Amino acid sequence: MKNKQDYVKVAFVGGGTGGHIYPGLAVADELRKICKNNNINLKVCWIGNSVGMDKSIVEKNIDQFGEKSADVFYGIPSGKLRRYFSIRNFFDLFKIFAGFIVSFFVLLKEKPKVLFSKGGFVSVPPCICAKLLKIPVYTHECDFTPGLATKINSKFVKNILISYEETASYFSKSIAQKTIVTGNPVRPVFYTADAKKGLEFLEVDKENLKKPILLVLGGSLGAKQINDLVKENLDWLCSKFFVVHQTGEKNVDDAKVQNVSSEVELNYKSYPFIYSQMPDVIAASDVILSRAGANSIWECATLGKPMVLVPLCGSGTRGDQEDNASFFEKSGGALVLARENATSEKLKECLDIMSDASKRESFVQANYSLTKNTNPAEKIAKSNPESNEYSFSSCTM
Image (cartoon, rainbow, N blue to C red; front, side):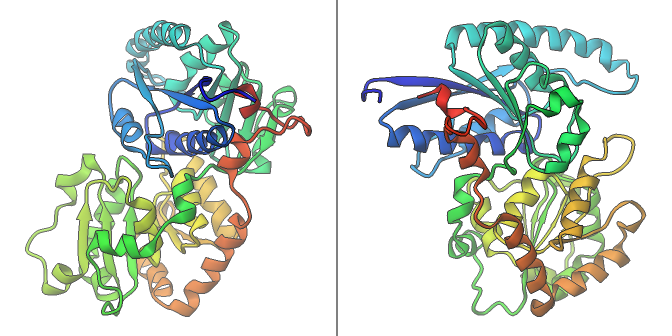
């Protein structure tokens, strides 16, 4: 046991979207709780994109003790690893090279006991640099199918933590031996989410509200497709639901509604982005209309929320959201509007079902059954040296 003055440093890397950040913050929060219980002071260093919203998300996240999840944020240059030809690939090579240089010196300066990667293109240089510096590396893949960054990082890590058993089959046999099924980390605040606080934030009186609350999410960056569907059908939506719409900070202007009816005025609220209040807002909601990013759907499932998922499809994506959505649809926790089915007519059909409380109940129970008695973030953060399954937190003890 270490004395009160002892402390350890752990580095985390992830960024580009909230899905590459929030699960890592969940692990950081659980690790801090473990360290507190063992009288160890923990310093969490986060490495993310030098541009974009990574810094804002990380620095605003608060753990269950009211402390910041990360003690320091380091922004590094990041280029995208595309699987197709683009002139931007040439310029991004320079960003990736710069990312290696900055990562190396950050890790050399901080000397963390371990590096935990949550993926995204920004994670590749730090993972390789950590391997060179003999710092143990662990990576987590939250999607059903592994992304390119995870496939690259898998060659430099001790273990690959995955959310679904089937994900192991997408790696080579030698790499698959390093996989461990943990589930997808959800921040501790989701296990104590308070619907009453969510209603207070939304300034909604549930007792006098005769409609279910529909929460519309498009991921941390927003989703133009979903925003457009909402705008096109806003009168109908507000006749069935009280609509809470997170537009995404990049889509605030496009999502603005004007000259609305009194029904919409009374039953529609929009926000560019909901930060620390999000767990409580989800807890207060009855139905979720969302993209199918692995992070958000696991958070919603943890709170037992029925979902209508509109996965990101097309040539600009590797199809991971379609796979995620398909898993939850087959499990009975969601309805899916993909590709040609992502129409106003199909949207109304799905939400007609979700407007009925008795029909929603089967989706609620399906999602609870998927996530009950599990805390993936705690599982990842806890040391379990006897089973030799993984030893992430044992690196800090």
